[in-house]
Image 1: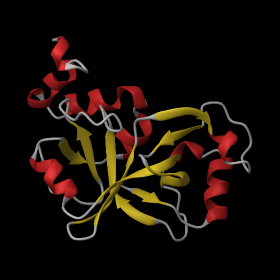
Image 2 (image 1 turned 180 degrees about the vertical axis):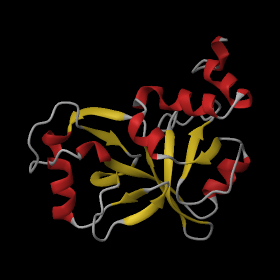
Image 3 (image 1 turned 90 degrees about the vertical axis):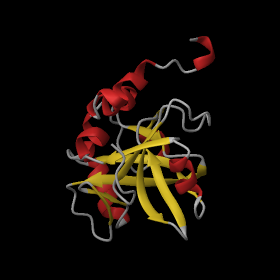
Image 4 (image 1 turned 60 degrees about the vertical axis):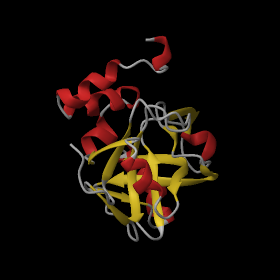
Length: 183
């Protein structure tokens, strides 16, 4: 069920993708330009680090964790949110937005609507034509992004749940072992 690739596309790693940075990941594509390159966030890999350990302006809140966005610029944080009405945010599709005015972002993370936001360390990036080549080689399966998958499905179950939602053609991939040589 491949669809046109652009912001708001989920890239689901094929079991054949061997890069450990992306094994069994789901990436939300946030920017895409065949000539400029692409940028996305791995949305199913929590780091196990409490968010308030990283963003010191936040009160402690159990379960609010930092996510691994990708291997590029791990020293920066990016905030993905939905239904938050943040000034200056950039739409990425599927009702989701990235970034925006810093104080409004902090208010969102402090408030009762914090579940509408995820904070990422780093991002995933592709140079001009690189993502296209990876798609052509079968490294990624694509589908439209939804807030349900990104914000409501448990990150550890997301890869399998999305593949199963795409029908039997892709559901069987969930049974492929991490290392097919042991099959």
